Image (cartoon, rainbow, N blue to C red; front, side):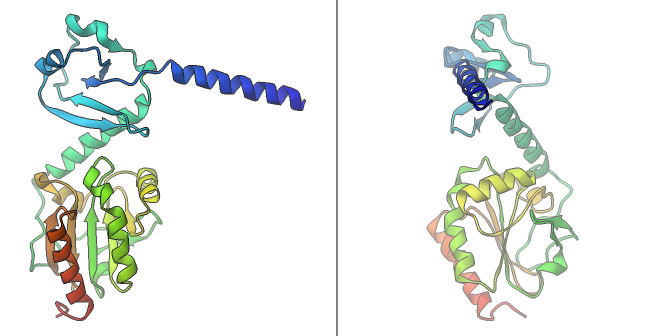
Length: 258
């Protein structure tokens, strides 16, 4: 019996390897269709010059050319198309497209009041972290809070995570909260991989809607009374980092608390 199970295991392993070898890393995604690197770049960019980058778990990069819903594959490039079942990590790439579309809709919201330094956080909200705790405006009061808004496709967001984790270690009385519009599994996957030790809100709409077109990451510092004391896009720049830390230090030792 053990020999049979071992043989079955070996057969499954071989079959899995053969399937993986049959997969292809595409160069382009156009309107839900995938194309090989043999597709000439000038032909691809005749279709659209508006692009976004996709990446799979193996760090393979795919150029996603943005086209309308009525896109049809031109006859001239059909020979370069890769059937979806042969696309390596195709489901993951499609998930990335869906996340991008969701993010775009959120950040382009026009019916939201932005964060304004010197004023309280606008509107009420109730957002859950990955452990199930609900965060509200009242929940933030009483302690200085730093909020970092990010998403998985943002390279600068991920690169700064190890540095941001040192802030939590240095200032244990400050609340450090991250907010991401993606689902719990995705947030856990990234934060565990990057060692990001903050409290993480998933499926967020409140903070994400206020990122706007200025880009990720967005960092906000809120004082003990819920007043916004800092709001800026990007935290990798040394000057930006210094501004945030100076404000945290001032708040930590009692400033901005009235």
